[in-house]
Length: 288
View 1: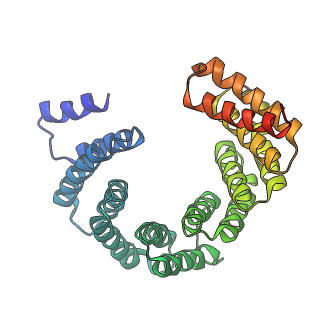
View 2: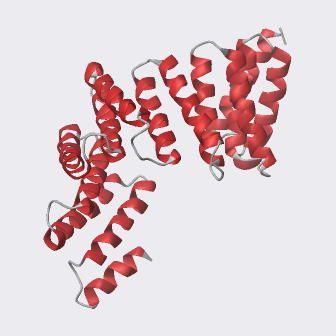
């Protein structure tokens, strides 16, 4: 449908219009979600050219596209070009909204991610702290959703830098915010799963089990009983039990996960084989 829309612009002689640029941004989003980052980047660059010609370089639409271009460069490992795009967007947001706007904080998060990926931990931490400073100011207008998203994204940066306790703190803050806002079930599930992984990495197996279990209970309450996500969470719960020496419970969880994966993908799928390996370890621990 998006390709068809773009072809209509050409047929009607409206190539190079703002409407075409908007459709190219949509196409980039579709391509990004399917992992086609190079093609998504091409669409964004074309959209940027069109918007600059129609609206001028110093506009909000161009700055937002610059930000998206930076994200595509990051996905492609082209870090210097990503940095340039982020800095362009940052300059605009600061000039337009001031130093304390949430748009500025959002770019700070992207810059923190950039420096964490390129091994510059001190720079990454500096941008993390700048973003947290903005999110933490009561005088800064932002939605609860923006606040929670910013905190969870920063948690990923801290996790990359192996500062797991700080990551957990931020995830808990984001979780508390989203629990107070209706309609964010998927985001809550994602955060609880992420917290479970961090608890497990820290050797806090009981807390990991609780986090994974909370996510499973929510999924099942919503009618989702045999999905890949449920199977993965059950497998993680089994690992947490195995690590805390609750072997019989771990076996039950591995068997449940195994049944889900076998039904979905068969016995030879990588997920099924991984659960079978975990199950073998649990039986071995019991001398079976």
